[in-house]
Length: 475
View (spheres, rainbow, N blue to C red):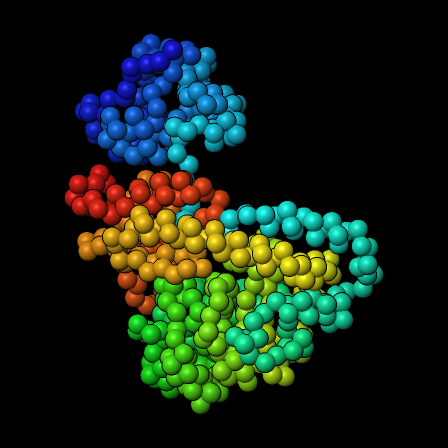
């Protein structure tokens, strides 16, 4: 039974109600049921139609529907819609939750939140490959379960990483320079524990940079100082000045893909930074977890191998679920870094290193990584097509889009308005230093769990919002 009922938010009471709009909608539905304007088994109008009629966002209406389903006031029928439930007094006396998650998620009228805060790799087959490798490890029964992991048990895995890495890019190194960790963040923290000295060490990083640098610094009671950048990346003169002002021991940097701005540092600027690092005897940690494509620009590890630590992982190129990270230490520092790992967690579990060995040795793994990159680029193309009229920065093989907001928008305001439209993003504030400046910009991450159509629809909502003058938006 379809309905012609719609909530009326123009009444004096509704207009004066300062509560969230979804609660006002909930009360309107309950009142309509109590007044017999909605009867048992009557179908409510679709979310988008209600939103259009009353002038609010679909996400607001969807939340009201979902809350009332959970209260037992409404019921959800898969593929059919939302109906008035028999217990229409449940809102006053709450009943046990009757919402079935699989039903709610399958109703097309209820738009799910598009979470574009952090990159999520699409599964193009790597899940099945990991399962096959895990079965091989289980059936091989060669793992020594009576001893702790050590440099002998993880040597095959380090040899597999050695073959996996591009030596022309990373520089000269051998299996003894490689240390395994539980992801790139863990590897970076281990390096800082290995090299930092004193009660209040100082770490340098780009003024807009990966928040993991700040988290690691806080854990180690270090101060982190942001260095100004220009169109080429971190400015060497500003780094030089900061070293004279603060001292400093470590520079954390992501030259291949600055997170969040997607900026790539060219060879000339890398050499300039390398000269400053060498002159002042800094340690440089190069986070290279985001870029998975080919490059002809050498890493800092290749330019200054005695000062640079190279960190990467399989999280952004294959699967973050594996928590596989690794560091290539400067010459002669591999033993010290491996010792830090032993002190922290007694090494990576042998079952995991056995899995890494088999996974990285399979030719299908590289094929799957290439397929992930191809799929990511499809999402990037969609983003460029939808948002190309705005000031965006993007690159192939990088699951991030950086957007400078149009004049008049503030990052925090736009994030709040986007969330009301069912799209969640990060602002530049999330990547700025505690006392640093943040431009009015947002970072959009590729979410491979969303279909291309769903991803495009979410970006279209952002596009409409960006094009709407703020004084026409209901706040």
